[in-house]
Length: 519
Image 1 (cartoon, rainbow, N blue to C red):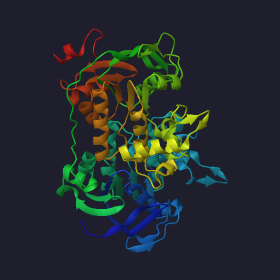
Image 2: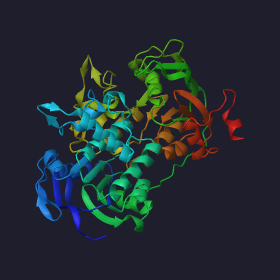
Image 3: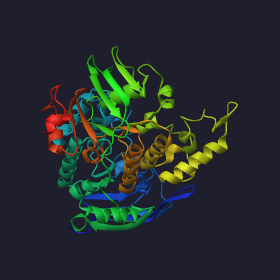
């Protein structure tokens, strides 16, 4: 491959109050290559791509396309230059259909009327060509995150973009969807499109990228050919020290039942079927029970029912530490031993326009430590937040007073994990706890989860990452179409076997136990 670059970002510096997000960074993208951008949470990857897409203006530096210097003041300029971007947190209008989102801002009109028939034909043709199956008439608020992402990719392809930026594209996808996306990306590159791919997942980089550029704390560390490196070397470049990529834990020592779910059913909002159908299981003190499954099989609704975000159908019973919490409030659950790391950090984890310290104390502000005679003790809130930021390495431009919306996705996630881990819980419900985190942060969070287990907490983990499921869990429950179809010991089952249960190809009889299946 020659050194003719389609995009060059030369000596880019981007500053925010109290933070240099990009410090003299250079990135060069060749035509037809998949170029990975790797770095810790808050290393400046998304900021650099936002400069290229016109969301930010750099204080210093030059951007060139095909050797010619260009000015990108906003995303319209970027689109005119053939640059498209799939953001980590999708930029979709939830009350619009998939089709309306794809054509938004690029509508074809005739006599003042939008030509939807032509647009639909083009979208269906693109979705067929690239294997991006979507329902053009579905409302975005009703579709899975996987389909939302396909909608974002179709938005770029509809605009004939030739430079495609993927910001953490696999953070919200199932293993099967990730495999699909990897082959889609390879197909796009083979057609001559040039891809910039932000990720923390080293196995994805090894599988799909041609070259890797590494950033650390806003600075350029180096660019290497993927074929000349390995995951361990990349992780050291990224965090500056060696990282243990496997979870080390002693065998579980389960105690009394902390959470008991009995005949739980949750109605599906989109149709008359149950999203969760007559599910029963227990989680004991001192064990990590993982719900595994392909996204959209009722895991989300199951967690909503347990945590109080969704009402359970009659006949259901949820017991936490001996208390029947089936119809109790979320606060009751929180004050009686439950912590919850939610799947959607923006919808259920944070108030984005609050400061970091307000978010850290949001479930505890009424405790004596944080209030007196009904008035919040702000100095105590700040002190508490500073402690958590230090312990969990939550990076932001202005510490506790940072507006949470301005933080990187990974650091928003670390803030939620810090807050939920620190509360005095008997049960930790952790849904995709390491979503969007770098290897160093993943290692730390996994250690914290194991530590809480060893201290006697019950952990209910919901993860779409099969590596995480196999490494972290003491017991695996597979969920398909709203039902538990199998129970396994991770030491006795293979990923391939789990995959058969996840896809619905196999299921255990009600009488079968994990031991019988393993035998």
